[in-house]
Amino acid sequence: MFIETESTPNPATLKFLPGQTVMDKGTADFPDSAKAAKSPLASVLFGIDGVVSVFLGSDFISVSKNDTRDWTTLKPQVLGAIMDHFTHNRPILAEGAETGEAETLDDEIVTKIKELLDTRIRPAVAQDGGDIIFRGFEDGTVYLHMQGACSGCPSSTATLKHGIENMLRYYVPEVQSVQAVD
Image 1: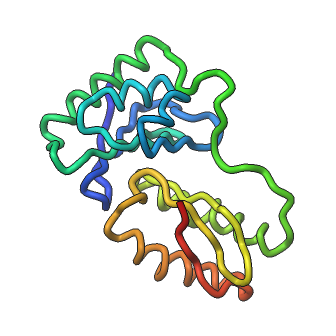
Image 2 (image 1 turned 90 degrees about the vertical axis):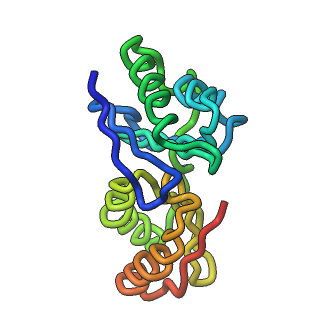
């Protein structure tokens, strides 16, 4: 098994590409070790000293480290854990674990916003090892949750305000601003 790695705009996060599907549907974000119990893979990765968050995308795994560890020593450990997990055909998520965003009944404006997120924004963000999840639309403000490499990235505020907000405002005039939420 050959696993590619890619850097992301967030220097604390690397994107690992195992060359096969990671998540069949949706994504899974594990911003801390307490939530990792839902995923055998995330649990193993959090067992590596220095790993502070794990994000599972369709065909990639984003791993973020703390400031005390260096990627030159951490990367081989992460690669080994991912390779071991996939070669032993272990499940990505524990049985019954939920992924992605909750289903809601959407009005026309929310449907347009979600369509733009899904077709234009999320694919670009996924290339950098992250994801953006729609959390709501109220009084002209779109609320988004940043995951994976996007969470804590130094350029995420600029991406959110200048890229995403401008695109949404252009295509959906009812959108006045975009705000990140946890």
